[in-house]
Every structure is written in C-alpha cells, then in structure tokens.
Length: 521
Image 1 (cartoon, rainbow, N blue to C red):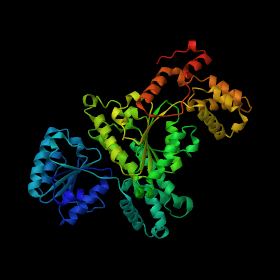
Image 2 (cartoon, one colour; image 1 turned 60 degrees about the vertical axis):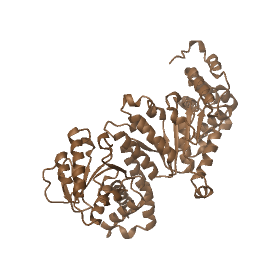
Image 3 (cartoon, rainbow, N blue to C red; image 1 turned 90 degrees about the horizontal axis):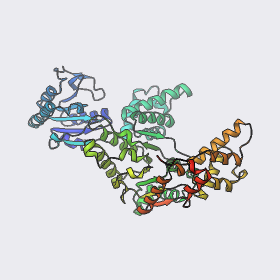
Image 4 (cartoon, helix red, strand yellow; image 1 turned 180 degrees about the horizontal axis):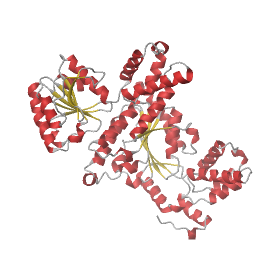
C-alpha cells in the first residue's frame, strides 16, 4: 500500500513503523524505480538532506539549506519538483498550530509540484486537523524475506571469514529465531552469534539459542512485551481438567488439516476468578505443552506519555506476537490496563477506549496463529465488551481447588521437591487444606520443608498440616469477595472449574478460631 501511494505521488503520507531504517530504504527504492525522483530525509538534528546511498542514510549530497526548523523544511520539500521527502520523528511537532498550518499549505504545494511528504515514526497519530489531508500506513515488523536479505548482506560483507562455513539450514533457523526483530536488531543478533561462537567454539555459527537470547533482550527493552520461560506441560497443573482438555483441542486448530477441514484458528480464552488458583500457571503450562514461545503483555505498560505513543505500543506488541507466531500471548491481569474505558473520554482524551477497541478488533479479526490467554482477578473492573460472547472462544471461572485437585497439587509440589507423595497421608492433607488455593498449598509445602530442613530431619505429613494452619487463606480473608465472584460467575453463565463445597469459609473460620479474624478490606 505504501508503494502504491508513492507511485501515485500522494502529497501527505503518515507511516507508522517499528523498523524505521527498512521503511526509509523501501521508500528510497521506490524513488529510484520511478525515474530517480529526488529523495530527501529530514530530522531535527540534520535538517533536510538529499540521501544518495540507501544502505547509509548519513551519506548525503549537497548542503542542508538550514532547514532544521520544521516549517522551513516543509516549505522546501513541498516545492521541490517530484521529490519524495521523509520526515523522521515528526510527531513531536504535531501539537503546534503553526506547524499544522504549514503542513496543510505544504500538502497543497506538494500536489502542485508532484512531491510526496512522508512522515515516518513509531509514535504518531493523525491530528483532527489533518484527517482528510493524509493517508495512514501501518508497516508490519520485518518478515522472513527482509531478515534473510539482511543476513545474506551481513555474510556477503564478511564472505572471506564466514559465508563459506554457514549452510542454508543454519540460515533458515537463524531467521526463524529472529522473527519479531527489526532488521537492525536482527543483524546485531546474527553478529553476536557469529562472534560468540568463534570465541567459544573456534568457528562461526548461527546459533538459534544465542539469537533468541538477543531477541528476548530486545523485547524486554520495549518494556511492553516480555518473553517468559514456559512451564513444562499441562501435567504441572493440578485439577482444572476441563480447561486443560479445552487447550489440547484448540492446539489442533492451528494445524493445516484444521484449515482444510474448515476450522478457524482459536482466538483464545479469558480466565477469571480467585487469585492463586492457577491462571498464570496455566498460561505457562500451555506454552510448554505446545512448545511455542510465551509472551506476556502487561497492559499497564502500554500507556505512554507522548501523543500516539500508547496506540503505537499496542500495535508494536501485536506485530511482535504475530511475527513470532505460532505463539501464546498472555495478557496478565487484564483488568489493570483495561479498567476505566467507560470514563476514558473524560479522563484521558479517549486513549484507553481507543486502545481497548483496537485490541478487541484485532482479537476478533486475527488470522495469525497467536493463542491469547487473558487472566483477571478483579472481574468487576473489566469492561462488559470484553465479556461479550465471540470475543474469546471461551470464558472460564477458576474457583478454589476441590478435593481431587488439591490432592493433585500436593503430589505435584512434593514430587517437584524430590519427595515421594505416596509416603504422605494425602487424605489428611486434602482435608486440612479445604478452602486453600494452589499457591497457598505450594507456600505451605515450602514452609514445611524449610522447617524440617532447619531441624535436620525429613519432612512429614504433620509438618505440612502445621504449615497449613499457619497460613490464613484468601477464602477467609476475602470470604465475601470470593462469594461475590462465585455468584457473579454463576449468574453470568461462565464455565466453572474446580470449586469447594458451600460453607468453606465458615468452616475455616471455626478451624482457625474465627472470632478474632477481621474480614474487612
């Protein structure tokens, strides 16, 4: 689409791109394809300059005509016949009335002279004054073809030392590992892999593990997405059989055979309910079972202070997830980032509402193999639109574990710590842990083992029961809140998993000497 607008000399084009260098090079290629149109680049430091080398934006021709000021640069570029002028990071000036006025005039002049003014930035939104004056293009993160070209260029430059020693299979795996990175980030990752393997192994190699490490660091620098180490498998999760079976079936929707059969790829699911009952653990276990990357999206980190930054952050997160697909996208504690949509127009100029709308649109329309798992504890803060049928494939309410689930949880955590569950009185532990969450049971196991270790002996069933009694579970501290969650889930008709029998809170109060416990927030 960008190339089409450039070929027809559209006067005003806004390009939202993460890979700035690749985008500028693509624009310059178009300038050469259509009769060597004059090609200029502007930034606030260098001003307007004519670039002659697509591989190095700093090799320029001619002087800069003192055009560091945006108004003068717009005037100069718009009156240069047939020019394509790229303005970098121009979003900083889009709140200035003089600049907006100059842009409208520049678009008129550019149309007269056959010029195109292209504004490229990671963070840019269209001011209301320019909505009818410009077109907007969203450029995806670099794909396999772009990354393979970048790798080939890197190897060609170092052909004498490297290229002959790296086969096509290594290149394919390297590109696969680099998906989600910009071209410049991928080149850095390839170079690090080559240098490190020469130093450690004595010969150059494109190591997928090293490249993946570099990708994790690049994603972490954004502060929005985070690569998370997956769990081992769904067998690490005690109970929740209905949800686990649901995931096993949904994995198959991403197979080619499913598309041939007429089945659409799964969107994902929303896990609501009591804290500490396995929602986050499930996200990790699903990625481990599927053996795919797990990315965690913290909606609270999406919001930025610059105009357009928040929307750009969400686009970048979605593009990164799609680039590394098949993958699991874990939206952690969704209520923290999506609450307040109803009042968004009054409190934040509609940013929250727009971001939420963009996320829902992507979720509804996505075709990429990205399985979304959203988790939430505070159901009341979630926008009603998120809970509407069709947004997710399923919505589950995760309750406190029942007797069978608690037995499984004890077995998992004892075995994880190299203890034979068969040597413990599991029925007694199950009875003593009624109303406890999986996280609270794990904490009790750790406390009991620490106590036994400090005394130089083996842990016993009695140690575990004592540790349980020393923990006041959420089912006591937040009894009323949990009951409200349960009633809400039942009235809303969501699928319920696990669960303990009614009256669990009252019974625990009696066990723990309930009269002295303050249940208020």
